[in-house]
Amino acid sequence: MTDPTYDVIVVGARCAGAPLAMLLARRGHRTLLVDRATFPSDTVSTHVIHPPGVGALQRWGLQEQVTATGCPPVGRYSFDFGPVTLAGAPGTTATPYAYAPRRILLDQILLNAAAAAGAEVSEGFSVEEVLVTDGTVTGIRGRGDVLTARVVVGADGRNSVVAKTVRPAVYEDVPALTVGYYSYWSNLPTDTFEAYSRPGRGWAVCPTNDGLTLVIGGWPHAELAEHRDDVEGELMRTFELSPAFAERIRAATREERIAGASVPNYFRVPYGPGWALVGDAGYSRDFITAQGITDAFLDAEGLAAALDATLGGDEPYEEAMADYQKRRDARAMPVYQMTLGIASLQPPDEQMAGLVSAIAGNQPAMDAFARLNSGVTSPPEFFAPDNIGRLLAGA
Image (cartoon, rainbow, N blue to C red):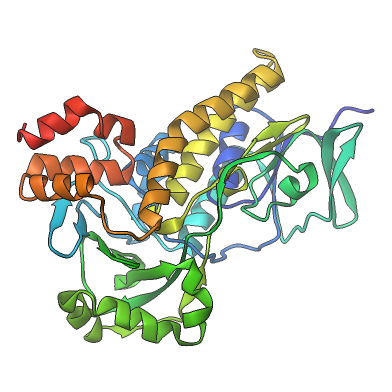
């Protein structure tokens, strides 16, 4: 077989694929980035980039481009449990803010950065076939062309054409737990990522571009059919569970249609002969913790480092990719398990209810709780007995 045309072909050019292509191209690897969409292009999303994701934008030199869109910084998270509300700072000194940019803006910035780094970009490209020779992925076919690569990466989401071809093993999988719907409201000002939790219901609020506020609400997936024909009515009934918020949103105006999603939960083995998976193609979690974009950024960095090591000859493919999977799972699994618990939409258990009540009004402890939910602090670190002891002691 002749030498492949590319070192890496990345299928999918959004929050995982575009940064991956950018990072590989910056390291000098011949990279092709394809997507069936043409950009600028919107997609269903919770929008939030938590501070660890903003840290990735800083490392890539892209944060200023995101802030230049006019998307406001968010330096406060609040968690309304009904009887108790906790509010704190979610970031660090280096990355104090979250952002929730419209995807039609964010994805274009990421795509442009990949092209500027030297990646070849092909929009409106539908992959007709993932090519496999003797059990090894060798390239893709689309537009009548055969394009070959040393590695083909699926960055094309939960319905990844690469994953459908290679059929990776799935583990820790749980069916969809919630269904969520969102839109954008004017005259609903906030500088806070607001999360509301009630038995069987949850919703969140965050400022985005153009003076609009993103509002997303949801209920158990088991109720999907029950409310399908009256989504807006059920959202408004959900908001009535907080009279103060219901009053605010009644005074606001919905400016766009309501979009919805229901997300399965799984990990897929993210690599094999000639192929890899990144972002939602390799790992998906319920949207309720809004970790998708941040996860995609961090996953892209991890895979870029692994591919760079093996493409450069520093490490055998199997070793580099096994280490990538190990590191991905060590970072993501605790947040995944926490997300599943939150997505159950059940009241906090007795221990958690006691903790929430005990730290209410204690600003350092509430800041720590915000950092847990933003991904700055891992669940094992936060829930370690010594740390809980310090929080309860008011340290």
